[in-house]
Length: 102
Image (tube, rainbow, N blue to C red; front, side):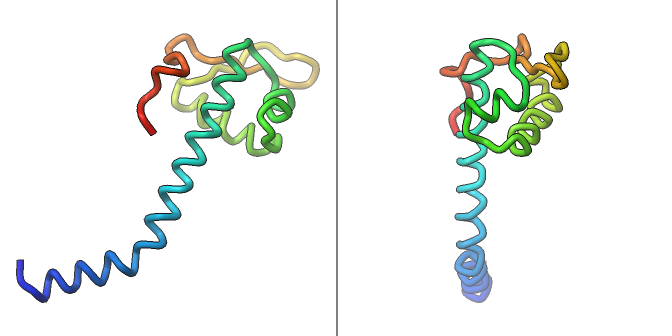
């Protein structure tokens, strides 16, 4: 690799440093929220408003995370309780202490 290529790469790393740091922080925060939701659902199924109250999330955020968890097979939608569906951890969900390192 030439010195010119090294200089270009160094400049790009410097320019992208803030974006990379922001992306790392978003990933860290998402992992934290997923752990909160999983810990709550380990106690049993709950609705979006119940999950939001228990985790301190807005109902919108809780629904967004639950939708993603359903998409990837981490949670399932169950029976309705009042006007809301209940969500539960999928049987393939690893125990909270055994998830991949974040």
